[in-house]
Length: 311
Image (cartoon, rainbow, N blue to C red; front, side, top):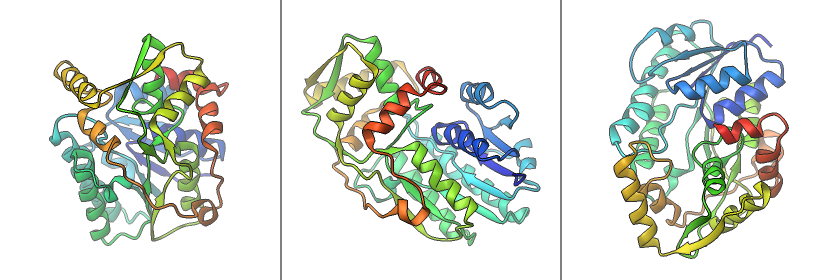
């Protein structure tokens, strides 16, 4: 298929998986714009032949030329973790304003915007604030597009969520759990989410806000147990007081400017959000993969699982 598809932020979790699935469906003209060098290198290793550019989307630059002749833009760029609010402002807000300008300038016929379930969260953190602002900008832009709000995602190339947890579990003898670990999550398999995006592209979905929520409710501690089972990790799962867990993360942040898990993310974990579940499999004509099956595929896929673990 020769539709030109531009993926701002396309070297992250969703982008890596989306490119793999688009290419499997015959799409060849794919452009990925991202500023994360390591992620781009992984993408080029697994998906040779696509166009990539290392670009800071919060600033005007040569990356803007790629929007000329584009048919579809899937807006994926997102700052998820971190301790500096300016990074969230740059990567979630300023970049969106510049990309929308390019869509208007080149009269690109199709936009799919990737928002987040956190826009309806009770949490108040940097990610939530910036994603709410990002969605507001898209809605007020006047550009028709579907807005997809996924919950916590996992799958191949997962650096921040289950992927990081699995790597940490493989390296330590004891895996700490905050409190009793009974924090309900609605995890979404990124492969299913990518299929929703592809459905939007191929069926020319023009409008609507869709909460793409995982269909199973799984406690955090049970997610950890499932990872341990599938990866055959030897670490012992140990519950520790929430305050101690928080303090450990705070100390970690003093030595790591980009920690994989922050105190704000811990607070979001225990916020006890429950997001709307809609029939997105029926709406978009895709399958909702059962959680246990999705975890198995994430860590034991013959091609991508090892890359995902190294990501």
